Length: 269
Image (tube, rainbow, N blue to C red; front, top):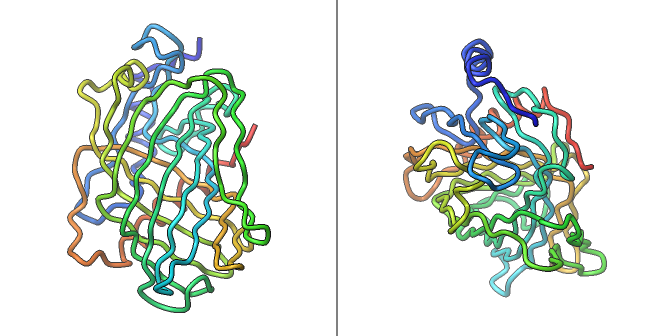
């Protein structure tokens, strides 16, 4: 069993410092939590972490108004982090994935082009355990108008869901496409058997994902973003962001994301 020593890990957190993703200067750090990979409320294989890393893929279609992109995507979570330290897992062990729906509105630049910036106006997600490790994850391809999707085999455990509090996104030729969202986090019946500590669990999720360089394309009125690496973390303190949401949220969030990504290599196994 991969059981982390809580006392030692808390010391590591104190020494390593805090990298909170998607937060303003006034917001609190990401919360430490325990997760049971077997969904047994702490009696199975457990891990202590303050973030979960994954790889995302998404596709968005341009709507008739010429400024709104609407679509969907998925995230395969492949490892846990504690104070940026990889806890040495891979997807075939974690088997945690999310599907999401997203709508963005252009606020600056040209739609689908480098330098464009967006406000996320709608975002919902559902989090599952891929029980048989047999789901099919379809990668978005703008050239063939193929949308990102997940085909589940059998019935997967439904763990959690959430919806948008605030979010933003942008596209840059050098750094790729980026998205940063803050959402609610609602455990489903049985979800507490996976996210079992603290109890009650955190009710805020923060996520930041960034593709690298050319891993995005806008053609046929469709934006496809692939291999976007990022993390999610949790707390119970929503970020205070004035409306309309400013793009400063994205920049601040990616500072935390960059700190994690610089120390943790992406794993897709």
